[in-house]
Image (cartoon, rainbow, N blue to C red; front, side, top):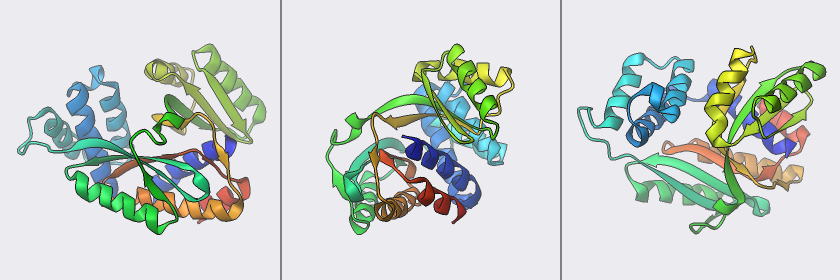
Length: 252
């Protein structure tokens, strides 16, 4: 599991640095629109929207763009939104499971692009329910703390504040909680002065599949290609990668 958790954190860091800003803003705007459409335009009453807006601000997305995306989601925009959230399921090299979250106005285009990337990268599409049962929704927090004693202290604090479990690998700490506890735990950790590297509600694998270095490289390339698709918001997998492969991936 440690190799999977570390991949998720590295991916978060790389996306913030490497993503083309135009594509990043488009994906952030789509998440805001979907969140507003599903839960309303009041940031204080809509946790998903609040988190989406926080991410947009962290990426220095102009406030005008944020407000436009909210209006579009609530039906107050200049043009009605045809965006919808969809999930696609598939398999990668080594038989690992892949769950793709997308936001699109054209399902046919999106499924064609996802299928093409999977098949060109040694994977294949799966049917509805083929791999989704391998994942569960969790609140996920990560912390980078080089001091082992401090990291363990943060982990125990998180448990006291309502976290379910944690994993600690060197300076990397991941804390998980039930999705309904996400907002309260995030607020409590921040009030205690914990510097969160990332915080999100994500689909987490129930168990992971360890991969050898060669297969890991193939899977990482596949996951990056999926993430690069305009309609794809997030990609989840149950792959567990070796540390040496992840260090090369981080430096790439």
